[in-house]
Length: 516
Image (cartoon, rainbow, N blue to C red; front, top):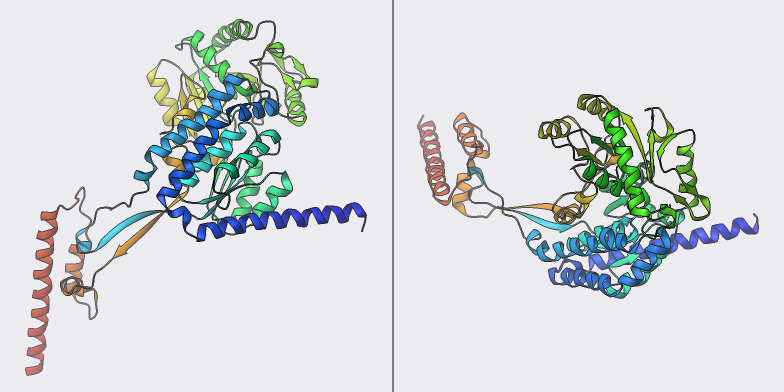
């Protein structure tokens, strides 16, 4: 065995020990019961808000280092979204956590039924690099509100952001309950070998499969926030000036590295010509002589992703943009025309500032094209025609739909955010985050009172037609009926009368049999 191999094994054992220790501590904290307290949860959530407020500059600096993210983008698409979603949770989670008392049927008239919102236990949140704070810490807030302990694994591709999280989270939150584990693939792999009670993953479909397989080893419930090629349909009824601005903005934010960014455009040749002309003018207005010299435009996260994106531009027909610079991982906003469905740029999620245009002659052709591919994370529609809007919504499937806008559905805490099929499973944001990390535990309580036992005595042998008829009456679901107190009393009285009548009849029959 070489010295290098021995060193690698030693490092691997150290990673395993560290991961195991962190998970063990988080599980021990959960079993102590401290996270069950609503008061404790609220304190942790307010501490998380305090962390955002007191460390804004440090967070923005990390985002600038990792992604060259402009200050305004970092504030409006990451920090403020985090704060506002967290405030929504703080203001409402006590109501969400209340015991639910569902309606009862006649057969359960004397029984107590309730639904408890209980935490799963110890949760693993695996974040990604494109919005490192938002995607790692927004699920954390929902998991805290639901009463779980949490291990957060931020992406190693945004190392400064990961280090800031690792430093701040134990400073502001209970360090026995909430942990941040930094590192790369080996650390993530070891964490996935641990037995968590819930796994929440954001990232690529390819890695999502690996996470799902790991979760299946222990039958652990999982939320997968993946991606895919999110299409845009643009027709001639849209306000093309506004539509072009909104569409290009959605593609240029974070240099196109957004899971719900417009991936490709479906439109007619006429609309394509008008869009291309507007795109050229808009990009001059926004970035002057070029986005590479603008402080308002980000960069590709890594050399690997840079070369992947430039490869998609090879032999492509560039109508707008196309500028690249490997020394600073710069790819300018780019519009491609004469694109065929079989082209490389149409085979994978682009995750960069490139918009290919596919020509379609009608909304029906656009719908067929969308349905011929995997379900996207989101679907964009730019049209003033409500019939067209509703037709596309009703005849396609996607995680979400955004009409006459891009990205902003992410900022609405009351809307669930999540994919379907290859774009993911499960959803979060606001109440949906709380529900994702909560198990609905049903509780049924039956008392030992004699009347109730008399009422349900028909279930016991020996069976008879009379007993069967009575039980069918009690069990029957009555459409649209939620029995009121008076109705309960009436049904109860009838049931008691029937029960006693049945008992008396049985006694008479028994007496006659004895005489005989």
